[in-house]
Length: 294
Length: 175
Image (cartoon, rainbow over all chains, first blue to last red; front, side, top):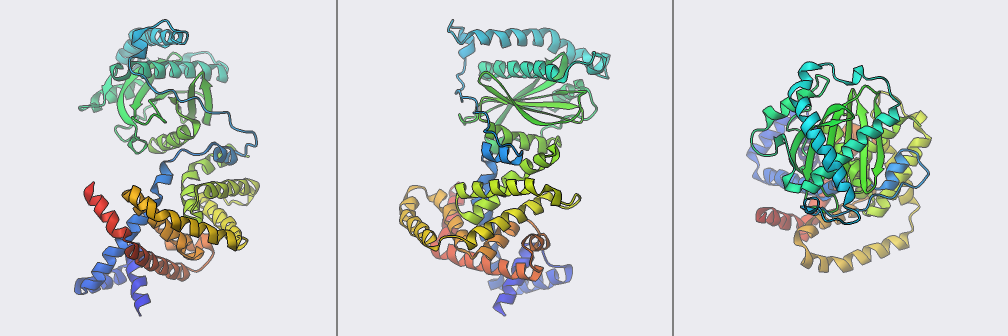
């Protein structure tokens, strides 16, 4: 008898009873404080069990599992070295051996910002509503990807080196919806990137801001994220347009930067950072899921 | 291998890892289990029926491999693991109270019989319906219902006896 009542309470808690039975159980609960206490205790223990296993969902996927899922027998390329972000490093301009590359993204970004970014932000969408991609001669896909990805890395490095001083068109604070919509409209394809539904806070990533950039000659949105978690570090998500067919997530590297990029229904995505590939895969899965880009 | 199949597999990996972690009680064993499941799924991908739920198919593979492992497990090794776990638990309680409350829950789950543990993980943790769980495990819905009820009651008693529920509530209040 006791087992039967437990079964009913648990099925009720799990939403597994039909309407007549639910009414019957609710009437029972109304008149039986002990049953109500039991239900509350069961609900609490269920919540505890879910919490106990929730952290697994936020762990980076191990490389070996990604390789196994892809049917790869070769070992996965070692991940990029994690370089803790140092605020203002680029601004000091010390002539060290490794500081030379900082000039490239800075210069590229300034050009992109002053020429491409400003022009595109203000006029590209109106003048060329169909986007630039369709008017370009066909190029070899890998080469196009490379240029696009090089740009993505440049913008990531610029944002990482500028830290809190990074230029943004859409600040993380205040009502940024209107500015975001302008950026979104500048991207070819009517489907806008939703705001602010892309939430990466479960990964400890805070939205820093967004800006319009130019990647491979086409406007793209750069979303910047920062975190106190040095194992992840700052991340950039670039969302642009593409005439190429859909492509699954693919890992690429540029020096000490990892990229995970994919194409889906006319959009190209690149998640860029210095974190390991396991984190990148996990976060990219989350991004693709939230943006319906999988 | 089709790209689509591999993508589906990667997308479901976090949930498979959570399920496997609950089944095995060990992060390393769980990833070994998931890796074995990936390899088996790839070898048998022709058996997957389009239009059916891919996640359910993968859960079934994980569960099947794990059951095989449980049946062939070395009993002596299992006893040793439990003893070691008990020795360390008191020390851990003193160190991180909040962490321990969840550790205690995981241990309590791990003490459940395998069939009850499976039902609990699929329904309570992953949120699958009784029917979906019954299909994965290959038993009638009534059996799942019964296993689940026994698991939930046993778990609740364990947590109340160990103070896990009270501690967890206190921690939540403190936060």
